[in-house]
Image 1 (cartoon, rainbow, N blue to C red):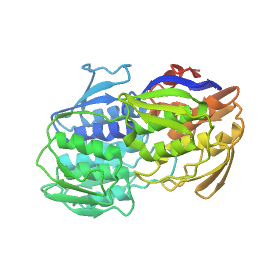
Image 2: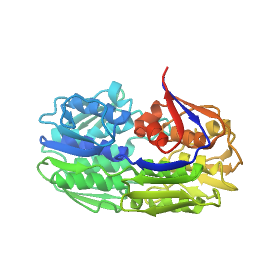
Image 3: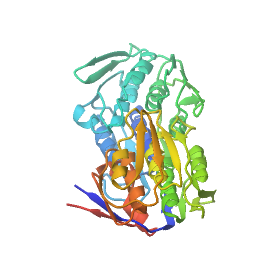
Image 4: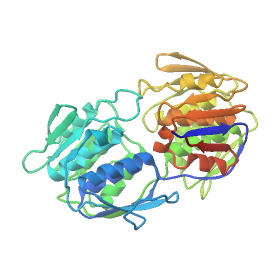
Length: 430
């Protein structure tokens, strides 16, 4: 099993190219099930989660060509992938595939919309909370779906004539459920109104792609999305938006270590709340024609309190990284997690590096320390794993991060990107 060895203490200086967003690429790939034409996606990152979803889509009959080739292989930071699903050959998404990645459950929406039926295993993924699928199922029922949950599978059937437009208000904001309901509604008969919809940039990106495919969608990026169903969708070409979580992660790494880095190919408008928080913590962030320039000012890291919230608030996917940054602040900060109930598993691992963090329910009190010291640590989930990398970059001595397969799920060539900016980071394979 691979590990990552970090020798801390170096400032970061140079350019880091920001990859396409994993959280946008996954639903965009799933949207290929909605049409028999070819959907071409540009700027698709090379990640374990993307590769897993390619296998799942292949099981349903999606033909994949990467950069014009049918075989998949190592590519650069930006890949173009053609997805063609002439015929859906299987409407079942089995446990052995779906259990490895939660987002694969989302195929239930397009399968149901196009074929009128779907049988999908209940999902797996990171152990950061229960994350039930109730909101997904309630939303699909509002479109007329008949559902049954038995033996670890959800069986969904559309009424005769297909799904029908409906009105549904999510009792709690859910990005995944908004993705699924929006995709399912594109082929429903009539108009669907989705209230209390997620407003994340990835929702807007999916809507743009669906519109290019012929869908009629308005309101994406607001709390109310309206979808007027059409009889069929065509192919399209769409570029995946930059990864705002990767952008924020590397910005925090620069704030942690000092230095001067251009985050190339990204847009600060995608994560304004997180960048505003970083500025309060002592980072100077400037939008340029080619990306975001991040520099830490000379006043050190200042303590800042945050509360995670749905977009446009501070992202839960940057909470662990920000906590790592706060371990070196000049005072006490408080971090409150409101999205997931079990997303503080990185606390004990940061403590192994010398961090002083105490927990009270969903709030962490972080007392900044003058130094961190390298130690072996264990990654527990995707975002927690990269928080340990950020801490290791500033720790004295050597930090060994174990179970880095979590990192490979969401960060494309992380060690390569950091090394090109002066960090001493290497992957160790056993």
